[in-house]
Length: 300
Ligand SMILES: [Zn+2]
Ligand SMILES: [Zn+2]
Image 1 (cartoon, rainbow, N blue to C red):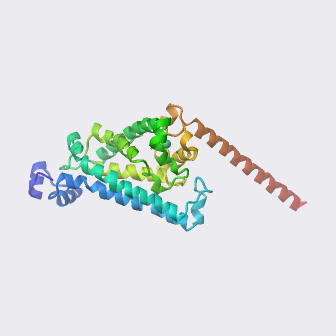
Image 2 (spheres, rainbow, N blue to C red; image 1 turned 180 degrees about the vertical axis):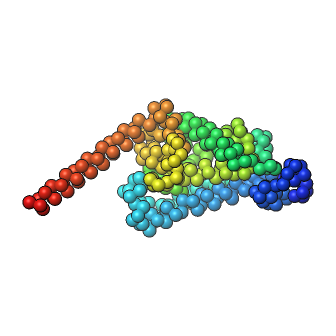
Image 3 (cartoon, rainbow, N blue to C red; image 1 turned 30 degrees about the vertical axis):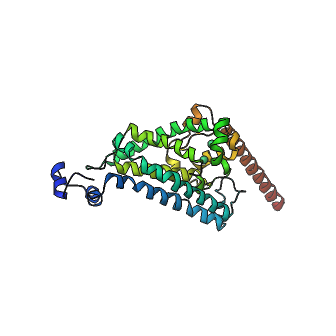
């Protein structure tokens, strides 16, 4: 809730006119409690978990030929029942763990100093904070994920997330309840270190989940805008981790590739990429030589 009773009081306090977005924010948030604003995250998460994976899943169920060549594991096609079961399990986890966790974590948000007032942060401030949040999350998640691949961690907790060896978007948050709780820590650390505005916090929670859905989508599109993000792992990087499964000692990072490179946990992935590239070149060369021979025979 903003400490101003009217738009003019807000302008007088800031000593200037409000920007367009500040006026929008004032009109929307002025009569709402900070707790209510924070709880918007529950709605955002529900919408993101439910709708962001849908387009690719529909196209796959419809056997759309245009996208098939971009599927990372083309031989695996999950039936509708299996996809729906995944969504149902994710929603159950959402209502039993993720939602209640959001409801009770408000005091910690207040404690670290997430603010809801005016002025709104600049675009530069929002982007810089989001970059920090992603980097802190990536590093912390890397080590927690690596720990979850020890015998105890995998058998007791992390094996649930690895049920899908060829992941789909809905499988991004599909995990044991304990993993959902533990991995809340890396998501919270960035905002705790560099607290920002509630809008930045909403964006962070939303973008982190959209990124997770992207890396579990099972498709690697060469035109994806994420290809322009330096060191971004994407679906191809994380898909390999699921493909190898429980024995995987490769590709632990959630967002970027540099942790796996620095700590030497991407060797299997890089070796596989090299072999695949070599095979592709051999197939291309043999096709070219076949074509040239056929042309020579024709001209003779
Ligand atoms: Zn794993
Ligand atoms: Zn995963």
